[in-house]
Amino acid sequence: MSEHPLENVEITTMCMVYDVTTDKVLVQNRTSKAYCGIAFPGGHTEPGEPLVPSVIREVKEETGLTIAKVVPCGFKDWYYPSSNKRYLVLLFKTDTFYGHLKPRSHEGENLWLTLDEIKNSQTAEYFLDMLPIFLGQGQHSEMFFSNVDHKPSSQWQKNLY
Image 1 (cartoon, rainbow, N blue to C red):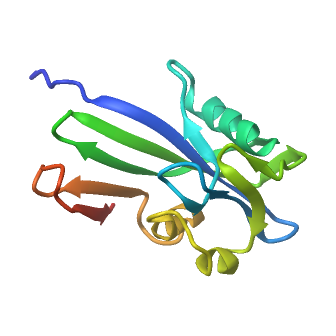
Image 2: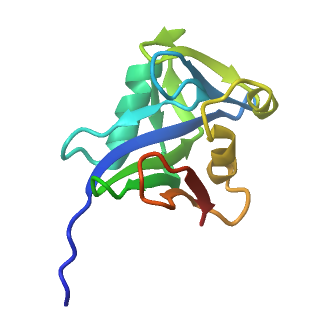
C-alpha cells in the first residue's frame, strides 16, 4: 500500500432552508465578504466539530432559525496545487425549522425568496450553478473547480460530477 501526502482541507457548509407553506427558500444577500450576492446561509466548521451540528449552528448564528432533519445533497470543492489545499463546501437542505428570522446578520440581509426571484437576483458567483444540486435536479452531486495550468494566475475550470 502506498502512502499519499495528506491534503490540507478547509471545510465549510451551506444549507438550503425550504418553507413548504410559502414555496420559498431562505437566502442571504451577502455584502461583507468576497462571496457577495444572494446565497444560502452557512459557514466554517470548527475544529473537531461534526458536520451536521456545524451546519445547524451556522444557520442559527446567521439567521436565528433552528433547523432539523438536515439532509446532505452534494459538494462544491476546489484544490490549490501550490499549497496542497482543498476548499470543501458541504451542501445540505431541510424543510424543518423553527424560531424567528433575524432580518440581518454579519453576513448581510436574510430574506425568503422564490426560486424565480433568486434566478432574477444578483447571486454569488456560481450560486445558480449549484441550485440543481440542492434541488436534486439532474445527475450531479459535485461541482469541482480545477486549475488546469496549476498556476495562481490560471483560469479555473468548472466540472460537474
